[in-house]
Length: 552
Image (tube, rainbow, N blue to C red; front, side, top):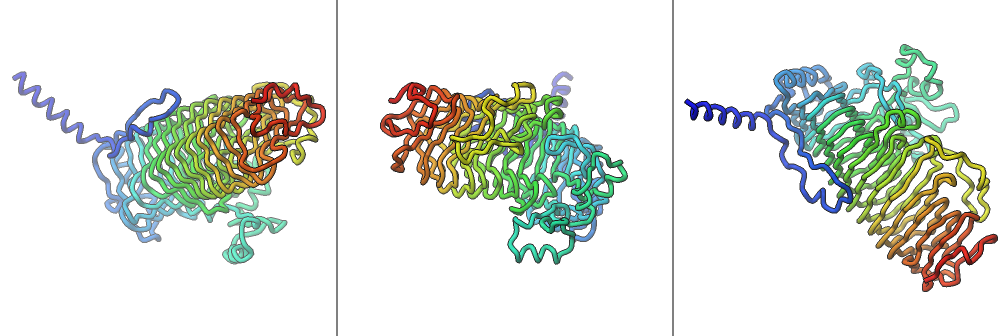
């Protein structure tokens, strides 16, 4: 009898293992290699091994029939029996918003296009977080709240029909494109510099929405553009395979979620797409981003944690993130932290990525009033080419009133007239960059801290940067360049109010009489390479050679 019972139990457990299966292709162990902090290992989501074909629920992939109800019914039925895979076959599947529930894998087969409706009535207003602030927005085309074990997989295309939502700046188009855009419909701003797809969107841009009632907000719904994929308070997430494109605002936005795997995606937006970010990871932990391609209208891979008081009150940093083997084409930044980082960011590893034609390569941004600490960021094996502005950029005056930096010897901001350090002061420290290879950048770098909160402990090692303009470093404490070479057409290094600098292993290929310009009354403890700088550094008025503590 005992053996019979054990046999029954064994059969039950075997059937259970087939009923619930982790999605194929677990995380490769090499993704965790070389990471400089303890990183949890986890598996792809556990989703029940049963299929639900969308056509069995009345779905029709002709690009005309609206499949909102079919998706809702398929997900509802799957949820009732513990979840499963919603299969979307080849075709054009027009639909309104899709809500993912726990245990659901939305799977797009080859040739499937999931096209979201242009009908704003399909997208009710909800309270959500966008650009770090809590506000009313239109419902996201794909969304999940408090869900576990969810996935979007396959090789199809997810299109947010973003042109129905997004404004377009005239400055971002050719004359021919601009004329064609106007002919397509929509309305222009009063100064004719911005095109809006509808009067509702224009009205929203011109109004003080803080005084609007809910009914009034509904009238400007087109202005309240949603992110395309919103995953809030979710756990065990997998996005694997599809193309995500043409989003109304940001493309993919996990928020306050954990155990996230984002891989093998093609994330696209028109280069002129306003707020057309690729991926915004906000207040999340345990995140893997690898083997993806980005070509977008704003920042490509972006890490955030809330804005100003909302972010500080939330108090959830983004932490434990691995970003590997990604390629970024157009984007305002290839890899970005901020500017909404008020909850903090820590333990981020990014390596083996290519940035090809991005506006900026590595981009760090914040401003007074944000607060938050960004620390323990490890960046290595990054290749950049055709960078339109700075290869590496730190700007703690983002959107604020930065001093005039056209002449570092004559900065306009009073060096002793700045706010005291408080909970609203942002801080960036312990950022390590190794093997950064750059060609054809406009500028080698721009490191701009605050006088009251310097950039702290920034290291660049084993790197070569070729750019037209040199590197400017202002308000920093602890800058080390080790086995680094700058190849520039203009003065390679200008520093102002910087201390504890080690340039003993900094080299220049170009022949400059004075390759380093040093200024600022707070500048001190500068270690230089004698063979490169020698005594031919440009020490500005008011500084003494005694401030240059050592010349190797």
